[in-house]
Image (cartoon, rainbow, N blue to C red; front, side, top):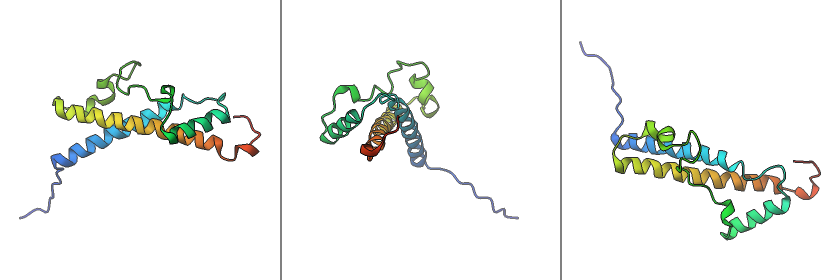
Length: 131
């Protein structure tokens, strides 16, 4: 009697793509989180507007650039803690995983800064509330 069981297996290419996307997504979330500390309740409209102008011009001071995503500078942020479950010991593959994480981190960093600056400069001329 024949059975109708289907085994779905993922190709190595699909697994690699999924792992890279997972690393990117982690980096993106971590980058957004780290960038959320750049602006605070004391940030002025002028600072937000200057940031956006300089960002558009590609002329930001280094103060706004993201930190090294995989420096291990902070507790809980070593490479094994952040990506160990995605790495397999193959140097080339692991390098690609780290690059995907770093790409995501930078994208998340910039998205958070630009989104925040845009939010606080929308029609701020009529905004009289405290932030």
